[in-house]
Amino acid sequence: MIQALPLSFKIATPKRMALGLYLLYAIVMLFALNTYIKWQSVNIVLGILALPLVTVIQHGNYRNIRYGTLAALVALLTVLLPQKTMLYFSVAFACFFVAENFSGKINLLPVGVVCLMSPVAQFFADVFSVPIRLQLTNWAGIIMNWAQAGITVKGNVLISKGGEFSVDPACMGLNMMVTSLLLQLIIIAMYQRRYKLQLNWWQVIGLLTISFVLNIVSNLFRIVCLVWFKILPGTTMHELAGVFCLLVYVIIPMVLITQLAIKYKGQAASIVQKNETPVLWNSVLRIHLVLFVIISWAAYKVVLNDRVVADVTATVATVEGYKTERITAEIVKLQNSKSLIYVKHIPGFFSADHHPMICWKGSGYSFNQVQIETVAGKRIYTALLGNGNGKLYTGWWYDNGIEQTIEQMSWRRKMLLGERPFSVVNVTAEDKQQLISAIDGVIRGNRLKPLL
Image (tube, rainbow, N blue to C red; front, side, top):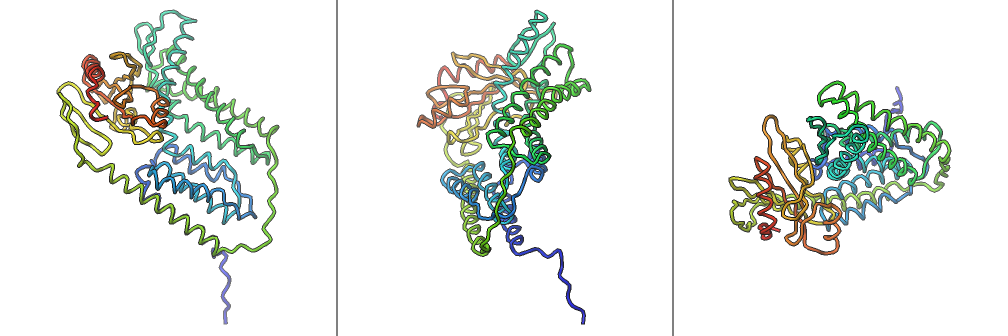
């Protein structure tokens, strides 16, 4: 009689439990976050590839509950404030909890990767890059005027000998900021493995901060180079100049700085003593199932909130001179023969706003000639939208019916302190004069107050 041979590929019970939990959380993400996570974006793909590279597991300690506690707290907060970003982090922390209970304690670098590959990181990179672009343009103009007079700065446009150079196409490195920080985490992981040393969390944040600053410096010199030598977008030299600046001002310095930091400031990983008492896997599984129920509850609340936001049955206040239409529960469209206005309500200080730069890009438009202008005594952003041969002029600011601002931190702080909720007001017209006239009429007469 032939005896049955043990199958080497048979998965142990704890591993089957872990795989089952990962599958459950994958279902939650597909159910509640499928449209939130841009699965084909560079940052998501790079983040998924980076996770196994930066993760170090200290086998033997299965009793750590730090990520389980965080996941439960964030999930409960999501039930109260159903935001997709919080659900995303709740699921991520739950997956880390599974890893630490069924494999062993993990290092902190994967947390950084998950944060950087999240859509909210790209949102902040897009929104806060606007004032950075304007400041970079101003600095580039100052540097070039030291060497050659006659450089004029207008918003994010440098005018040199009659030629205009926009910082938007010349500053693609800013759009790759999150990608650069993900690469920095991979560099840290690589040298930690080589030297068998680890950095503290504050040292990792320090290296990321240095990388961020060097990215700004790289983009500044890239702009100067492109304008000085009149290198136009879409050319081979344009791409080579960008690669050269990134390599010289970011990659090479960060490799050297990271290597020295880990070599001289890194600490040997502490040896984890294996648990002498047996792990009661069924009890561990029950804890994870309770956490999964809480996260599922949070996911249900997020989906329910999406349905509420999509409701267009609520009445819309009338505004003289405009035809009003509700697009969603949070967005109202106003239109007449001269201008188009979107009023986009912001639910809370913690919310990601419907930023025009993101919305118009999603509609296939590019942003050019971004600048700060003063209309009716208020500072606003204006830009030229391009789509093939067509172009539109757009302007935006934040408004709560009492005050107007373009500062992100200002309206968030005011909402946190209990002031009236703000909305994004985005006005668009076919020519610049119509745009300024429409914005002037809206601000001076506070015509949108019934909608704010």
